[in-house]
Image 1 (cartoon, helix red, strand yellow):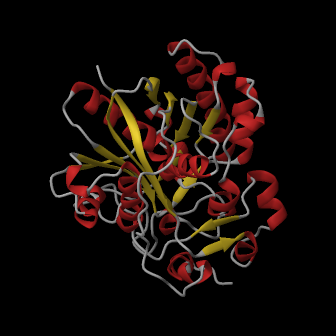
Image 2 (image 1 turned 45 degrees about the vertical axis):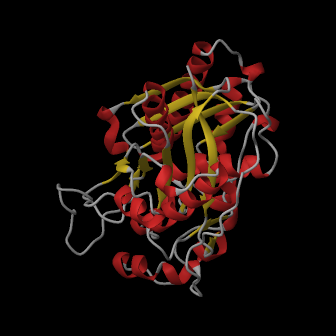
Length: 356
């Protein structure tokens, strides 16, 4: 039986940066406060829509796999910040990349969304239902951030990452996985009023709401425990892991998860200092950067772990294939902008009544 493998990868990071110094002008915070508690120094703010970010990342992944868009059978976009509720972001991405033969669907498992999407793609290919699947994690989270709330506004950024999954004669791919949800705790991390329940007040945009200490504790527990279980399912130990690529939520969560597993920090991929928490996009962005940096070798055993709103969690053990370099390189990019990250936040400032 052929193994579904990741054969292409890519990312899209908008050019506008919002630094901690910029946030000092918007809310009661400081670079020291943010850096100490989160490890974040900056984040990207997108002037384009979620589907634009996703399409650019998808084109890079297609080029890396050496495929044309018409060869894709299914586009999955993991996001909690789609351009519209109808049609799906995936439908817009299908058109923007030119995947004319592909079915398209959105998947919302918040920060765990990319791993949920990767598992769906793997099972589709494994059963022969689909041959080639483009899986994208993409978010424009700044749209839902109240920058008067330093508990949430300092954490999140925008971006997208993508992979192509297709059959391979190589051994490896997804060795084990676990997906989980605790819907009884849904209100601990949510965007209330963003659906048919309606906004709490007509003049206010729905915003990210989070019980930080509870999320921290549950994230460390869920990511650590799920990671241990998928390693056991795969017949591996922590010593067999070449690289942990976790959801980039917060440096303290990442470090606590690694300690819980007993994994050396040199085997952990961390890039949140520059990008913050990009939710469903964080793992595929980190994977693409790990490959660019030479941290994923042929046959590498990767451990993925994530936790997000829902409350959802996911973990997976993945054995990489032989190829670690893209077959082709795409020149896809977002349209240029002269606006700064601070400029792009002006609508949020108007909605939430805070200048700076």
